[in-house]
Amino acid sequence: MQQDKHPDYRPVVFRDRSAGYAFLTRSTASSDRTIDWDDGNTYPVVDVEISAESHPFFTGKARVVDTEGQVAKFERRYGDEGREGTP
Image: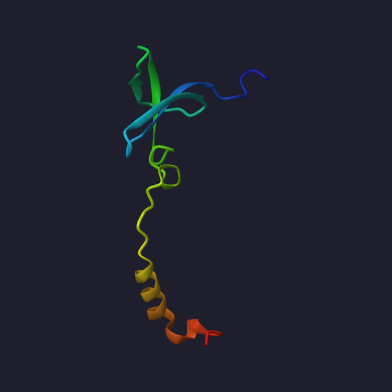
């Protein structure tokens, strides 16, 4: 590796605020905020919106999608024009 061309690769804590889950890994991500970790060291912390702990694909908890509202919205917008080719 060439010196002074690559970002620092260091331990960072990623925290999923919605699930209350955090994990320590190595990354080039940076943050001004820090967290005291279980091992007694202080690491930069990066807050994320979704992780494997809160993502519906991994948790099996599907979100309710308002498909009826989407159909009504489509019919209001296009009426019978949007149904071309349907008997």
